[in-house]
Length: 84
Image 1 (cartoon, rainbow, N blue to C red):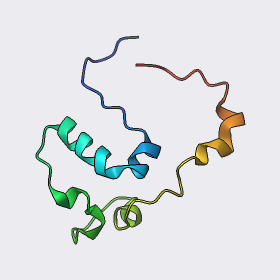
Image 2: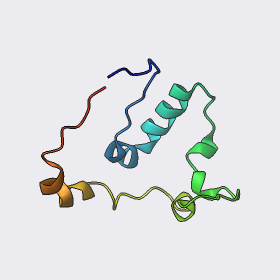
Image 3: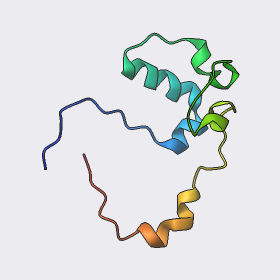
């Protein structure tokens, strides 16, 4: 299988919600844009969001979804996940 040689930043959801003060700037730096404190306060933006995630982007980060994959471990344990 061929893959494009483009930079990829691995972001683990559990680390993101546990330590956004480190992870947000890391993501912004990877994107090559300047850090703005508004990035950490995304949920306070008054901009209209027209996606299915509207409800999520209007709330602060929450950790209740972290680890939920364990409910499905028996179903996904045999999947041969690709590594890049």
